Length: 397
Image 1: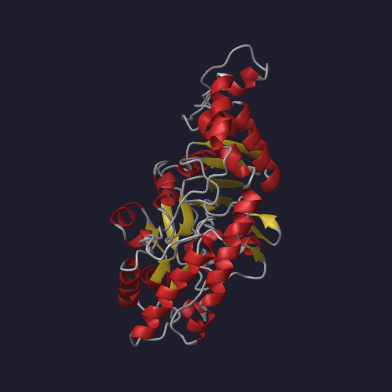
Image 2 (image 1 turned 30 degrees about the horizontal axis):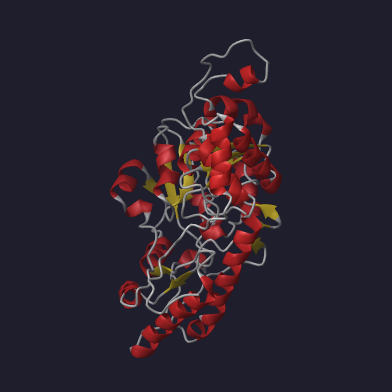
């Protein structure tokens, strides 16, 4: 039950009720560092639900991406194709290894990387493509995989927002050579800060374990395969603590229910804004038939940046927290310094100025959603508003 006077926050982490029980159990086990019983349970769950060959828990999705690009041997002179419309970690993980992010545009429908831009982006220096599954909606993985195979490139999925989602009935994160998942507190399943590297190509299995364990063969030692462990490769302290894994296990146990709750609320939003979309006042998210999304996010595209700003201010006066999203990386100070862009990236620039994200969390409830919907309808009814426009870049025609 909600009150009309209660602030509606953008995100609130769902608590299943088992988190403290499992953390207490972890403390009782006397194993608080990585690779304990709860870490192993979480890894097995991920391997089962993503069909990956090996899941390695990390302290963040950023750490998972850094591990992936280390395994891909990205270094000075190497290029990695990625969307500009993504979080900074996608690019930072490349730059940190000495590589160059190559920014391409996103599709105007899903806002995922536009696979039609690859021909103009690939060079003899290109080593990998990073599909970012925006809002838990899958990229065109069949086309991306085919292009990568034809050009000898690796596919490293940034599936930070995509746990539980599929494309062509294949779990996101488990399709490319490597994948990265996030368990940040804003994600569907969370442990505050956390992530996972999904290893799908057997070529990387042995080395992934070593890089994940600070560059040592420590895991082989604990399996009794060597009589001592030592430094054998580059690596870092990427693993997730057992306390965080205990919290995460309580969440993974309820992943299906969490996703179902989010999908129900996402559906309420989607139905409620159909009329506004028909009138050309907003554009709703697009989910292709090939995708089963996970309701990570609900957003609207307004007519222009001014309307977006006015809408956010309008709902804020009614104690509703709605927010924008990424500032394009290609236009950022670091993006211009460390990366390069292909084309004008008109869709990215356009949608980033018009996109507004609405509150969405499992315990939000229908009453709060209807209050958000009411405030947005009130905004559009109270003033004349220009119709939304689709991105005009000719490459999409």
